Image (cartoon, rainbow, N blue to C red; front, side, top):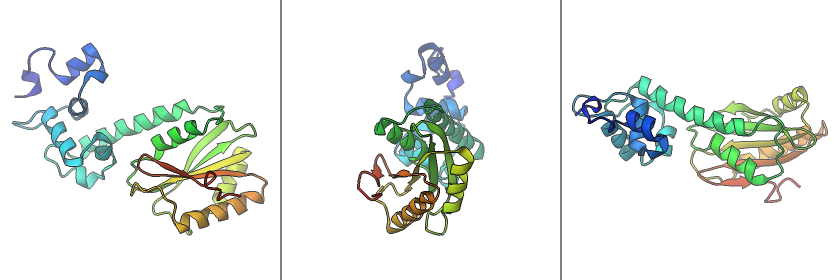
Length: 225
């Protein structure tokens, strides 16, 4: 039965409008985004199949287009709708860390970076620029792709720091594998960045590696001394 044929108030959009989005199941939330199903399958049915195929909303939204679009009833348009919803969530989180926020609490930094970088299907290297009071100036994604010593250019980080007149820096990147343990290449990159920033008297406060629900801090491990 198509959702349009369901009894009044039972469709996911109607339920959301009447009672709020928090009352919807994961499959119903997906149905609102998907908007339509297939002959013999409602949008809620397709949402359930997507969750079964990937295991969770988080894994579904992190999956690449070719995998998601293999599912019946899901094409590039529906994939784009899902990705738009995921990006909206990231941007809302980004707005919480407004310019001028003081990063006095390490947990705030961790929570923010987890929201920005967890579940990306590719590696992202980013920089948090801070002023002399450790207030946020800007969060900038600098590089995407496989992270190695050749793909991160210290001069680009230095250029950005000078341009934004930052007084301190936190760098971060994710591991799409979900394992946050830093590699030897990560440690080499960090040393190069620290040395480059030293030439302009700007401290590298930390390098955080984001995995699946965990973050490894170079500063906490004593690797920036």
